[in-house]
Amino acid sequence: MKFKLIYPRWPKLNRQTEFHLPPHGPVVFAASLPEDVDVEFVDENLEEIDFEAPVDFVGISMMLTLQVKRGWEIAEIYRQKGIKVICGGIATMLHAEETGKHADSVFIGEAEGRMERVFADFREDRLRKVYDYLDERPPIEIVGAARRDILKRELYNYKGIQMVDLVHASRGCRYNCYPCAVAYLGGREFRPRPIDKAVEEMAGIDNNRLFIVDNSLAQDTRWEMDLFREMIPLKKKWCSHPIEDKPEVLDLAAQAGAWYVYQAIFDTSDYIRDRIKRYHDHGIGVEGTILLGLDRHTEDEIKRLIDFLLEIDLDLAEFTVLTPFPHTRACDELMAEGRIFSFDWNEYSADKVVFYPKHMSPERLQQLLQYAWDAFYRDEPQEIRMYNLFQRVVRKEMADNTFRPRDRSMARRAFGRNL
Image 1 (cartoon, one colour):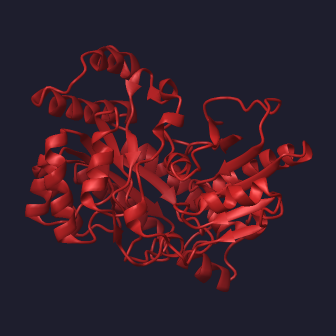
Image 2 (cartoon, one colour; image 1 turned 45 degrees about the horizontal axis):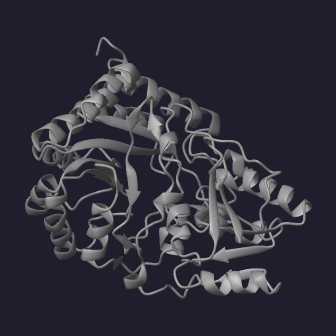
């Protein structure tokens, strides 16, 4: 059976450097397919879809709300040709009812252990309209290594520089943050993979640089430390979401190859200042993720926050505005208050204001987002800060003899020969 798996295109943030990482959802999904399925993967961000190529069945994997309208367009093109389409992924789960109007089938939940049934139904021409496994999560022990062999590896670099491969060591999140849909998607229970399986998958990835995409590594101290101990011999270099703020954990993370973290900066407290310093003291870089437009954010507070970011020596910063994605607390509260004015999913890009802020107009919040980017990168452009962070991983790789010399010349091409 020829199965085409498509990842719809989506635009980057307005001020974000344009590069593409190998997507995680499709390769995890592909690992659950029956052995007799011949899968072809197309990342529309990097290549065109050949709608005329012969195919038996089409899957559309959507991670972001920003992808759904394009995903629906693709689905309709194939359905007009008489080819059945199934949609899955995070964004499908968030927009399941609407997606069902454009696809023959919608898959909701985690794929492991379920695809044999789905494909048997397809072969027998009794494909269900909805496969809903949201509350029936598979045993975490059966989650295997992702199918990275479906990727066209040469497409995933930045001007010749090898980018990170994505991998996960756990699912679920015990936190329920205001703007986040993970509590709905993966549940409030932290579900760590067996460490030996997670580490085995990392070891088998033909890339020294990884992005551990777990929602947060800071959920179980013992598991986190055991994971890092087992990762040390791999000599991989990796980035992640937050690491637990304990000296013994940070020390092990550094030994295990922690390169940098994405750390939410939510206020101007001494705790945040010290948190960033502790990362740096352990040789771990920090990309601050800053969300603007919360109800406590006045114009003056946003400007104070930007000044604070410049004081605490962040390596990089990424600015977004609050976006009320479906199935988040933010969406529920803003909907109840009648403050969401746009449901055009192409506007849900995290850099466009789609709601009425509490202390300013939507237009003013949009202007402050631009101000934040301009102010933070005024004295040191984003490209130079990226290069400095890249140099950090090169130094780590050189220290343990895993550095590829060609990356140095590629970096000069990517960021400028005078750097």
